[in-house]
Length: 106
Image (cartoon, rainbow, N blue to C red; front, side, top):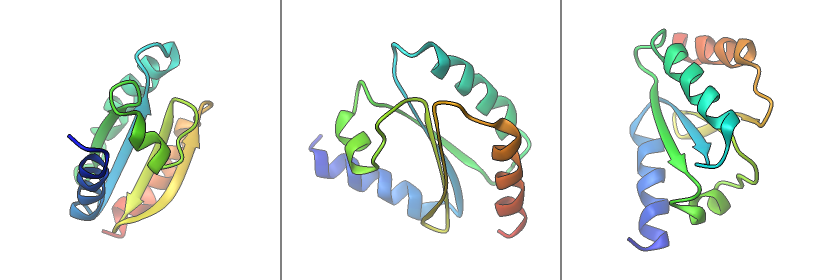
């Protein structure tokens, strides 16, 4: 798949869902595994949240398109717009507060 096709696929996912969370990770990142597990637990609380995992090892061009320069990075999109970004040291309390807010206004 071409770089533009991948970027367009990601953008279409952003525009399809009213609320989505992208988890950018790397295979060699031990923190990423923990973050992904916590995201799975947290996502069960939000029925309309769509979670997408993107490996920057497999698709390095997408990290550049979304300015993801470290992993793990979380991006929340609400109605096609980025509304939250967290990298490296992620506060799950803050993340849950943001998701609660945007989940309620859908």
